[in-house]
Image 1 (cartoon, helix red, strand yellow):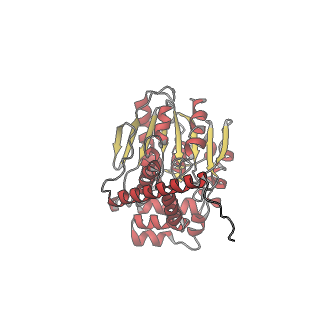
Image 2: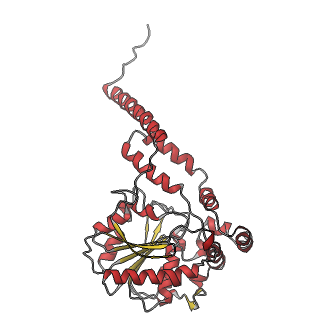
Image 3: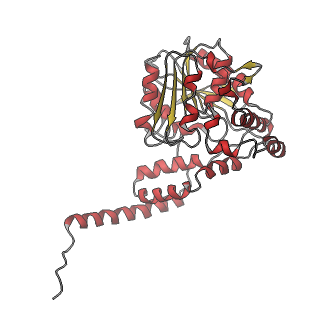
Length: 359
């Protein structure tokens, strides 16, 4: 006699039916993605262009403006487009901050071409950014302004505020911005002066092409595309996931070039010589002394960040002269700190609550 084999339980059948349903949805959504001719809509938070100079633009976002002190957001120059901060409704750092009542201004550096190859880091920090900051302050009607630097935007904005003590800085926030380049991770090893001749690189290429920028970031995590596609397949049944993936994937593959002289100064004086934390940096003829900063300071590191690891962000706290200063380390990576699904849980509430208490 053959042993009795129990039949499938109702739970097993329900699970099989659910997986079959999801598989059909995966195929349906995959076909829609392949056939779609339209790009996802991004950057939907209402805004107004306040000022433009050369390639750079200053945007002011609609908000209830319940906080007295406005906020100037300074992102990275080059590399990627700033719509990552306003990716889509309910997945937008900018939307979240405006809903919290902040008068929010964004620096959009623009897209640089070969005609901008003479544009330097010092030009961004001591010529363009001070002009944009003054325009934002005048537009807000406030007497003081908070500044938030993200990624490369932190060294740029710190170079500005540390050399312009006359600017009425109320608060400063560093989000995943490298300060001590001795701890900057893989990029620091690749750009080490012993192995990377930045003068020869810039003199040969002029500008740094977007494809070269893309290659550098892809090599940080060579298996990222594979794991991303695996995650997409398993979540392809979920239309909300697909919508978010399409928007993020569009941004993640839209890299921007660097002006040649900006890249030369960025690599030499920050990655190779680590002048910022050493107090040896000079911008526009003025020394960049982080000790000149006395306002409240918040530094935010991301635990899994491989672009600006926590150990290169945290030293800002010891470098400034502020009495009110705080470092927090949150879950996530460089992008997911501010734009990932976990950002709305971990990072977004922390930044406005800290600012609100001081605005």
